[in-house]
Image (cartoon, rainbow, N blue to C red; front, top):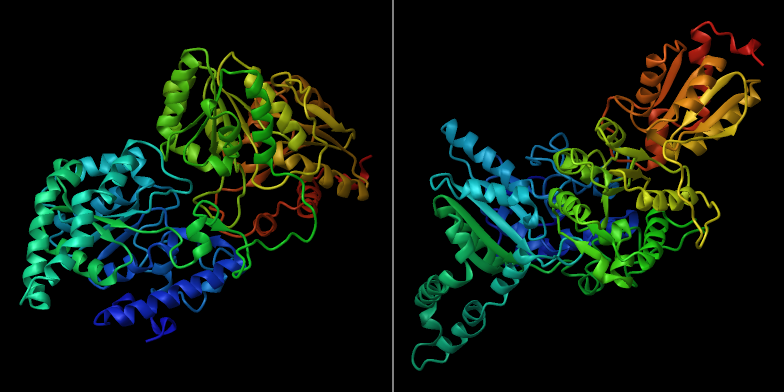
Length: 637
């Protein structure tokens, strides 16, 4: 059977281990070819090929439920659930999503792009099954990195208290999340992987029995029982924590041995109550380059399969925002030992790996634990340190209570640095940074700013460090800047809550925020070609808003347009409208941004075009909007 013939995972049933190994090889080949061509997550999927095939060999996916944590582990799952023929469209507009989506396939039982959710969701399904008198199997596959997330531990705590609820948790232990795991739990798992009793059982026992005189191979069934008994004797040591939490612990199992995996999963299904199967895998398995560089090949842009090197850029690009932020922070931290950079398992993505390399004593990685990261920062701030929490916009959502309860209510000077704010592209709705403007500006004591370019990000990094009157946040986009000239040193903090006028005109007031300031300027140029002259403001701050600058101009010009790369509901435009309303300035306001929809995976440029947020589209909308309001733009000027 060829991989392309598999449209339903139940077609794996009855295949021999040798046949499954052939399918595994084809999965890796298709996976590598696709990601090397179009980009995507690489190492996670390569590491779980045998795990997927072995588990699905023991499930009936017309009935049974599987929940994959995060979803970027699930590329092999996608390839055996009817998506082989269009897998080349991975992470492209209208193509196969990079994460699981319930609307994409009936086999995607739960969608997720954030870690540590699988056990909770699977337990919910198991409880629903029991309440409705059904008997299907439920399995959750969670990576060891995700196990550091508090939500996963909460779910384990709950499941372990339900001895009559059948649930299998498969721990995919590859010693990695994106970067190497940190903390006591990964250290404990590493002890399990290297436990002498388990190594003895897997490496030595069988070989020794084979050399017994007159017995040899004839002891095979008895040998299996002896090995199982020995495992039970060793279990009190190696699986003690999970057993004490109410789980039956099985493992560690070789995650690339299909025969062993199938037998283990069959045994796990036969047991009652919650069962944890500990599977030891190698991230990037089957592609030597990825195995040797598990951090670099977690995800990749298009690359040469033979060399592993990325495709060279056709033209030079300005430095990325994350790099500018990190290099500025490192220079500030060199002169201020109280600065501490905090990441939640995203050192490379946020650029904090540069701080780790230069000033490791001023760097903290808490693992996948955003809630802990923020309250940890609050504790540091209590003792006069300068905590800098660098977390993606989409992930900071997970710590919203901590932002309010532990930071803002106590008015602690924590500096929040929100990378990948706005439209992020191929990762899709789970990772879009759409909501931070709205969810931060509503909290008392919070200052919120956004730079128009990478040079202004340097200034805002200084501003955030120097501001000690309470919490402050800066949001900035994914990807490269605009090529603005950067300073090596001598940066000055910006005055809090003050914007700047970039262009003068009497016909319409355009107020841009953050990444939308340059498109606002381009929109103004297009309007000028139609005889419409605009004043353009770079707001810089959404809170506090520069009302002293904006309000008089709005009252004078009488037509206001706001620009933001975030949700319109409660966002920057809403802040402008509220401020003018509170001042009894009754002028037409047209808000441009992201409407109340989920933005699917596509390139940022494709998404902005679909949303009508290119300068040409926005200029056309402005002309039509004010014409519809009978404001006769053609006669202005």
